[in-house]
Length: 490
Image 1: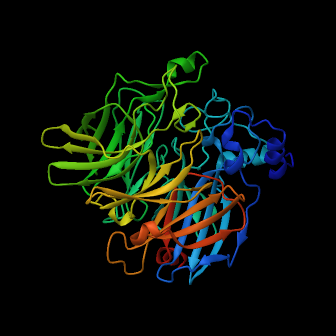
Image 2 (image 1 turned 90 degrees about the vertical axis):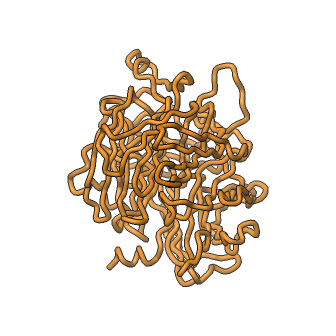
Image 3 (image 1 turned 30 degrees about the vertical axis):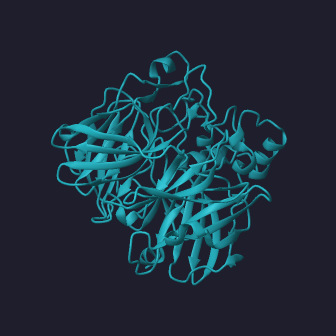
């Protein structure tokens, strides 16, 4: 086994100036070198005493120097968490200790190719293409465990709180037949977890339900005309909504040794609505204008015949050759997402509404998770900075009842992460609580955790918790209440 320190593996790579064309290894995206624990953090303002728990955010953080190319999605999962209790805060950051990372630790170097290269089929991997399952994407709390999930569908890794220790892959008591993709959903009414898995081999999509005790209760294949790149799903109390969007890796090109993606504008977007415990043949497909969706906001049953869904839609996820845009890009992906509303009529089988609600580029939407699958009034979305890389310069609070929005801007050279909603103790309304999010300050290369009163959104942070090391810009986050953490500990 080669002895290689992380500082040498990454820091020397950055010093060599080999990051040209790899912007997500530099500056505020650059990986951090150390896993630390820091207590009694410095606070500007005062941490409110009417809530307690832990904010955790996932992020790509490559431990070893990339073999050749690098995409932001490639990095090993790293969790950054702040535990808040009795007006005090403790910070921790830890790797998601995946099986793939263990292999690279044994070798002392990166083994896997970037997702923008042809896979090395000699390596074990996920998604039937020897891809590295990094666990770097999503976080979801279910059955007393925090789960780290990967966007391309892999093992759900259980994480111990507040330590952020990886407990191992959760195979659902031996019943998980394939994988679990990011953005599984937990029903606040029943505790059921709905998930999907997608692959390049048939069945291209599968759908499952796990009960509140971690038992796999339902699992069915979903018929698709071919491989599709999936990224999210939606739920309501009676239904789940699965996506068939025409973005995919060109498997025929892969057979010729070329690794490329396609967005087929000649195909419609389709949304499959299936009863929560429905069989494969019970799914009903609703067509809509052709877009790609990374993240939906929420869905709910307006009445017995109509389902409403809000999502962030992208007309051109891959920029046509010859066209230019000032939108952010990640590798071959272009990001110009706009908030949209869908209405599906179960009686007629038609999509009766597809409407763009806001022209402002925004994504990474979150809600009060107690409203997941139920009619929500508010969401909190990240506003994109006009920049070549993906940066969030503000939070937007959308009010779907009033058809209005408010913006909280972080300030010049300051950029946020996906927020999480933390309810106040004994909350009386949907927005009775706080938004918590990491904010990076490019003027001094530092990070804070901001706590924002959701009901006084535009006034900004009531407290800023100083983090003793830079927190790189990252992906998805969650909030776990102190009562839930204590229940697990007992």
